[in-house]
Length: 310
Image (cartoon, rainbow, N blue to C red; front, side, top):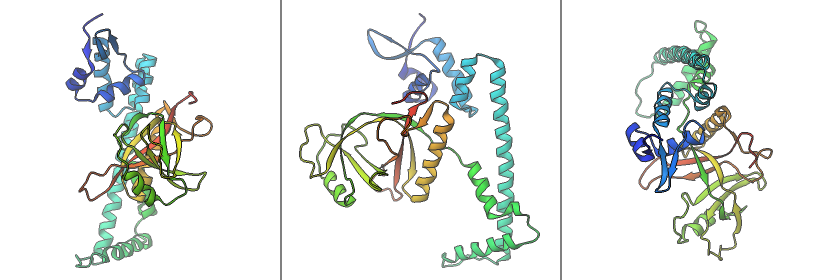
């Protein structure tokens, strides 16, 4: 066997995280080794060369599922097909950007016709924009493709995927708020002194059986008094995780994009009653640091590997 390199050294050399390397390995793209005198992953030169190739393909924005397809086929035709499709995607994005430019330019012209000025009362901005929208839609010299509906369509197609990571949460005991006052539950669990054995230690999910939002709190193993709240076995498992601002529309937008990413991954699918025996729902955990004015939330989407029932 040729010289083996530590996972930390590989991560440092190529400016990536050890988590990324483990993800590549879990996806079947690379293979690591372990020795009796070293507990962590090691990579040989063949794996390192593969890592370099993967990083080049990722720089070209080639999806992991397509990279897997390239290596599994070991065919130049498959590589050319994947790259050709990427060129078409780029062409489509360029065309959408041109449309977006035309829409924005038209919107500017309509605002100018409205004699829009900088008002001390910025609440007038919405009123001015609404008037401009009506003029855009009513104008005979502007085609329907430049309507606000078209703007929303183009913007959605151009929307970028958030950074998504795959994590494994452990199975453990949790207290649940059930259909009770969430503020009271928050007040209780926030006062419980507990070692940070799980991060995060609390989640919020919508429980369709109760038809309400339910708060979950990871309790210490030796805890017996849970203030009357039900304790249950949290199933843990695989989750696709992304960060969003803790705002209604933003959470919905990012949640939708994560679901789309999972559906298109080729490797995972969202947990449901047919592929997962556990009760798992989309969850959220607030991660806002102290003093930050705009709250943030990590979104956890339960997933399973395709073809493997949990």
